[in-house]
Amino acid sequence: MVFAKVDSSSASIVGGYIPNASARQAHMSDSRAIGISGGAGAGKSLFSGMEAVTWIPFAKLIWILGAKYSHTRAEFEYLAEAGKSTGLVEHVRQPEDKDKACSAYSIEYKAEGVKRRCHIETLTLHEYEKQAATKRPDVMILCEPGLIDNLKEMESTLWGRLGERRGRLIAAGTSEESSEDWYEIFKLWGDEDNPMGGEAFLLPTWENLRNYPLGRDDPEFLSYEKAFGTDMLNMRYGGLPMPPRGLVLKGHWGDHLFSEELEFRPDLPLEIFIDPNYMDPARYIIGFVQYDDMTGNLMVIDEIAMAGYTHPEMIDLFRAHPLSRYVLSGVIDPHAGDHHPLGSESPMSYWENVIPEIRNNGGRQIPVRTTVQALKNIMTVRENGTARLSISTNCERGRWEGNHWKLTPQGKPKDTACDFLKALGYWAVEKLHNERIAGDIVDNGIIEPVDFSIGGASLPFVKKTPDEKKYWKEVDAIYKEKNYA
Image (tube, rainbow, N blue to C red; front, side, top):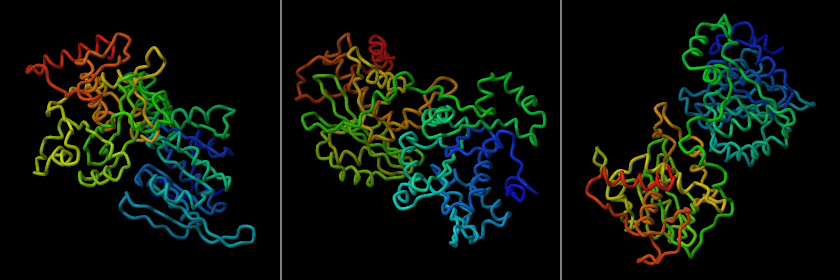
C-alpha cells in the first residue's frame, strides 16, 4: 500500500500515513463523489492530499481547485511531499507566494503499453473557467467548497468536466465554512440513493488521538461543550456542517427571488445602484434596476461586480455595458461624497460626470437597520404569491451575498459580504420613501397606479426634518407599521 511509504514534514508523518477511523472509511470508498466535512484541525486537507496520491499511477491530470490559490496550498503540499517520498512524483513547482499556482508531474510510467505522466495543478475558479473547455481531469479536489460562490450551479459543470474521463470528485471543507449550497450538496451525498452516487463523511477533530489522546472525552471538548453547547461543539469539532445560522435576510432571501427569464424592458425606467468598494475581498458593485409603478414590481436586471478595480476602470466597464445608454439616474453609497483621507477624489465626483442625476442621500448615512428593513420589504411575498423584487440569475455576486451576509454574535449585520445588498438597500430605502410621500403604498403592500409629477420617475429623496434622529425614527415607524421589519 502506498500509504506505508509516505513521509510528510508538513503533516509530521514519518514512516507511513495512518488515517484516522473516519478518514480510513472514506479512503476505502469506491464512490465517484466523496464529500468530507472536517472539524477544526481534523485533517481534511491531509485526507485530500493522501487520496490524490493513490490516483497518480492511474490519472493523466489531477486538479486541486479553490476559490483562491491559498485555499489549495495545504492539499498540494501534502500530495507533493507524499508523492516525492513514495517515488511517484518526479518534479514539484511550489512558489513561496501562497497566492501563486503550484504544479507537479509524476515519474514516467506505462499504462496500457503507453508511456505517460500524471500532471497535478492547482487552480482558482477563474483559471478553472478558462481551462475547463480544453482539459478533462481524472480527479478533481474541491478545497473549502463552502467558500465557493454559487456552488450548486457550478456542480453541473464540474461533473461535465469529469464525465469524459469518468473522473472522481473529492470535496473537502471545514464544517464552520458551510454555505447553504455546500450544506445541501453534502446532505444529498449523504443520502443512499443520490443521483451522482456520492458519499459523505464526517471527520471529527477528536479522532486525532495524537493531539487529543482521550478522544471525545478530552477536557478541551468537554469544556467547549459546556460553554457553548453540543450543537456548536459538533459544528466546530465534530465536522457536522450545519445550515448557515444568523443570516441577515433569513426568511426573506431565497430562490423565489431569482429568474432566468428576466430581461430589460425599454418601456420602464432604468437606474443603477453603486457601492464603490475597490479593496479586495469587497466588491465594487454596479447594479441595474428597473421599476414598474403600475404593479409595484422591482427588477434587478444585471450587475457588474469586480474586486480591486478603480473608479475609472469601473466607469469604463459601465460604459461598455449594453444597458448603460438607457440609465436615467441612480443611487450611490451615502459616503461616496467623502474624499479619501489620502487626498484622492471622492467616488461621487467621478460618477457625477457620467450620470448627472446620481444621488447619495445628500451625504446623510442611512442606518443599517433601515437598509435591512427596506430589503426585507421588497423581498416579502405578497398576497398574489410573488415578491416585489425579482433578480436575474446573472447577478451571481448578489446571489452569493444573500447566502453569506451574517449577523454578529450581538445580532448586528456584519459589514462583510454585503456590497451588492447594501447598494440595493440604499436604492430601496429611497424608493419606498418616495412611494410613501406620493401616497401610493396601500395596506396590502401592492402599489396603486399614481401620476408622478416627473413622468414616472421616482420623486427626489428629500429629508423632511432637520432633526436627523426624528427623521429616521419616523422612517422606521413607517416600515414597522407595514410589517417590513
